[in-house]
Amino acid sequence: MYGFGETVFVGCRASGCAAPGRNLALYRNGLNLGSYEKWMIINRFDQQHTGAYSCRPIPPQNVLSPPLSVSLGHAPRFTSIAVYPVGEASEGGSVTLTCSSDAAPPVESYAWFKDMESGSIPDSFSPQLHLTYLKCTDRGEYYCVARNSLGTHRSRSILLNVTYSPKETRVWMRPQRDIREGVPVNLSCISHSYPPPSRYAWFRILGDQVTAEGHVQSLSIASVRAQHAGQYYCIASNRLGSQTSPVATLAVLYPPKNTSILARPSSVVDAGRPLTLTCSSQANPAVDNFTWHRLALDGGSVQSWGTKSGPVFTFSEVGPGESGQYYCEARNRIGAHNSPVLTVRVRGRLKVIALASAVGVSAGLITLTVAIMISKNMHRVDMESGEDASKGRSVTADTMPYESAEQTFSVRKGKMSDIPVRISSVEPRVYVTSEKTQCNF
Image (tube, rainbow, N blue to C red; front, top):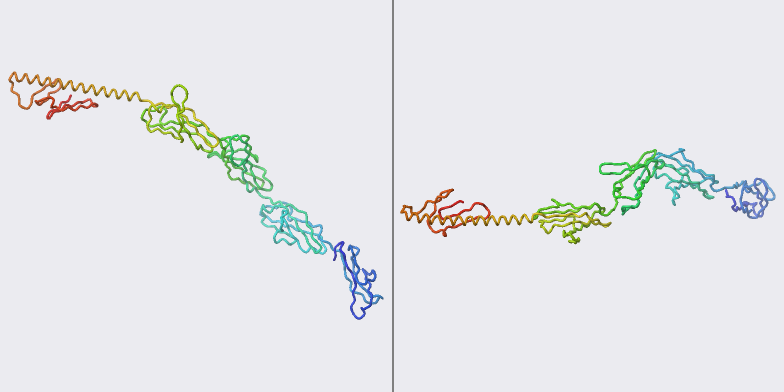
């Protein structure tokens, strides 16, 4: 069998005792083609050259060679693919692809290919390709190639659609990082399925609550704000099922805002007591630097007092010098913000001075009173001693009776300079003592 357009050599050859010197005639389908010393050359073989060729000696004798059939062959053609069962192929099911081709000689081998891949599908050299336990990855374009000794032919591609519910659902966010307030943000729900998803649903997680955000494939925020931050997820659905995406976090970066100062225990505090000022601010990323300022209460121009880093400014013991107007500056890599001014007043300095003066005056008065009473006692003792001596009254050698308007004391005779005196400047009671006698005033 020869292909169309090929060059074919046809000749006769005899053997035996009568062969030498004899001419042979070539016949095709009983038609004498003439005598050829060696070969009849057919330059472009086609259908008219096909038939049964035989040889006969000249002159003709009852000797005829067996016929040789020469036919026109061709490479595979009209190659095509049939799918069974007809219709949709579902995930988990099976399907058979059959390759057919017209070829002479018949097709010797087949090969199957998918999605224009460079290599053929392994173990796929038969006219049928069996696909079982179909997966979504089996979806694609398939074609086959038929081969015989005269050539090859490729079929047209067919698309095998494997139906399946949504898979690999996820949230695609643009921009993906460093999202600052004011920029546009787009959230897209991406999912693979066949048929494609026909419904979408968006949700946002706010603490313990979940709120619905829409039923479109993409959520668009023209100018994102801090209140848009949170966790988002979507659900993609088709007629075969649905799938929920993992949670995606939308983090919105913004400079410090709502900066304020809290004074504990109060912005009005007594001298000598502790005072704590705390600076708080909302920011993303979090505030990485706090700066404290104090302005003097001079009633005139504002005067800078200085800075102190940290969110907490603590005084272990305040004095009048700590009175002033305080504010803090909160800063992150996006920007900075100042708190309103907080006025701190320290009270109690005049009360302390008045109390010290009162204690001093009281102590002086007590001392003066004691001195006067001691002087009166000394004078009375001397008078009574003189009177007793003149009257010749008998008195014991150790003691003399003394009577006051409040109480009677026993006073030992002797000099008043020998009597030790202890005076307390704080307690209202004053004690005058001698060796044996104690007087309470």
